[in-house]
Image 1 (cartoon, rainbow, N blue to C red):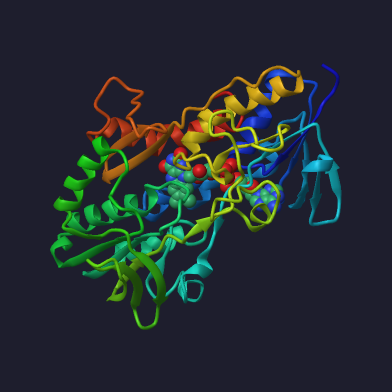
Image 2 (spheres, rainbow, N blue to C red):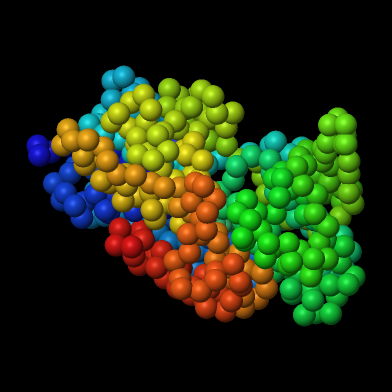
Length: 400
Ligand SMILES: Cc1cc2nc3c(=O)[nH]c(=O)nc-3n(C[C@H](O)[C@H](O)[C@H](O)COP(=O)(O)OP(=O)(O)OC[C@H]3O[C@@H](n4cnc5c(N)ncnc54)[C@H](O)[C@@H]3O)c2cc1C
């Protein structure tokens, strides 16, 4: 195959995995990774940081150490796409052309969609594990809580790691139980989803945990505002007639998860799905090839593939994208298929975790020869020890 130029937009979990895997298969590819950040973050550990059992400094490393030696790092941010000319334009004004492009700049945290959120985040007992500099504050709040009302939110939009909004709630309740204060805690879960979990086999386990922790759940609600100094959160809920009513709760501790959507430069581009309110990249959900531009592929949190947005999903998506990009460049049929696999490791207490694995049909697809819907210690060790090691040493290197 003559030398082909590939551009990867975003050198995160997805971009680094794909770059490494492509080069392992075709060492002569000319791969450029456009990535503005000097740092790369292992976000799945932020839940553990918020629960006081993981060092935040171990979740960040230098991007340069993970760019494959045969790839070129363009330290810039993509601003616009000109797919009809096979070109991307960066913030610096530089433009780059490609034979094939892989788009994976993740998802945007829309903090501004909750009024007052930006102003109060990181103080006034309001935190979020969705930001590197905030996760340690979550632990400060949980550790110092002496009882009162604790609120955990989950937005109405799709988010990265659908489990993260409630994982931290179960760990907080377990910590308070062990401190002997859980009976003084009034814990509320304000969720935009219609149920605790979409896959019924795993939901059954979580319903029991919610009961044991005495958590009050509020489903299909939309958090609209938070007043940190007044310690009040506002949300919308439909009444029995289907009419939206405004409600509010006072809190002493609040863990917020922001609404999320495609990054603005994706939303406003020809790559976005025009029918998707969140502006995600419009791909075939199995081949991950763009529906209009066949030399563009996308994976990770930025696509409209209706899977759960996780690093676990990327582990299955990356080899499919690699196979299909190479087939496309060789003018062969694009045959690699992603089945929607995702995984959500949900700790239900310190030392016990339920590894929820499933696909597009919301059918459990368990890897291990045990009932993974039953929280256990082995899966906890997988999350706390094995997966972080696997991520830095194998996944980002394209070997797992
Ligand atoms: C609190 C929390 C808990 C989580 N828990 C889990 C879990 O237990 N298990 C699990 O599998 N997943 C979990 N996840 C989700 C997982 O972290 C993400 O799904 C994964 O990181 C997505 O990878 P990505 O490559 O799409 O995005 P990222 O890894 O975020 O990389 C995107 C890259 O694109 C770059 N970029 C942004 N804008 C531009 C631009 N304009 N031009 C070029 N580059 C750009 C960014 O700088 C970044 O480096 C969790 C996430 C959070 C926040």
